[in-house]
Length: 136
Length: 285
Image 1 (cartoon, rainbow over the protein chains, first blue to last red):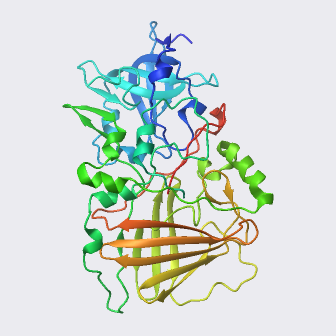
Image 2: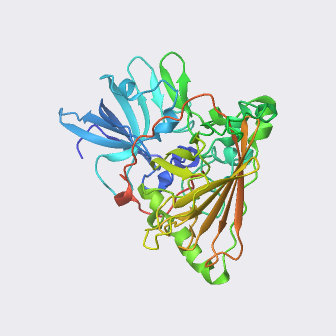
Image 3: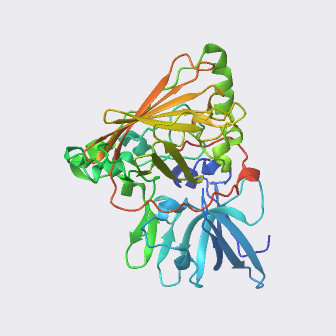
């Protein structure tokens, strides 16, 4: 896959990753926490559905080719009264996005950890010790 | 419907989660928020118990929400998820500790089937694929609308929005050809200040709770609701003479909420094709 993706083998991450155990199946049943995918792209779509919302990232590779990643995230109820809305997630800004890739090898499918924007603000949906998660 | 909301359980949320396999213990996030809701209104049970014009206790209101609200703002424009947001502070934290439900006792010949279903829950549990939990797994009513002749129980669940219309003083549907359903055929009557809801015709497509707690079409459920101040003492007894060795009872304390129930987004089974193992956790209700 020729997107601007860095697959960082992160064995150590397995020791500290505490992506919350979201809605019913374990994250580990689908996603590989020993690898972190880093993308640069724009949130192009959000499916606000149970049991998890899905965030779509249009990620550009070094040649400008766009690949859409479909990233599973948290249950919609987790966002209740938070102020982090679908609209806010889709503000059009380019973000650096980290995710765990799918264990079954499906291209462009993963579990969303964090979106970080050029001005420094971030949406860390991957838990307190997900990569970069301690940042405040 | 199992409920295990303990400080230990919350602490477990901060330990590495990956690679864990399902056990009889519920190691997942507290998917229900009874104790959190109680902690926000600690003297609810001491309030006067209101009654309607017909003399029965007033059960109207929002009593419970599915677990949520874990994402919050940090700094000016950033957000994160933090399970600590679910833990009450100070003395209220004492109410956060809750005993797990008792396990239903199956007849010995069904133990292997329950284990098989539990071991293969990701595949076998239809609620994990957006089917309704049904009664009794759906839990106590989250909102109640009460009239003299009927009550409406409303549920905003992970699997979608569900409802039950429960006539007071009516008899069960006598049609022998009536299909069993997820929420069954419910009728209610008042026994003093306690509302007793009798439920039959429950489909065996549903389970009693997580971890393979299957039942037969002979399942009979009795729910009891008694308002005490601004709380409801709720109990559910499941009697299945086919698979259970004895009736199984669990209890909940519901606390009157000041907000609305709200509509749950639809449930979409996006994950079914991507599981590579059976690791999962429960959703207490």
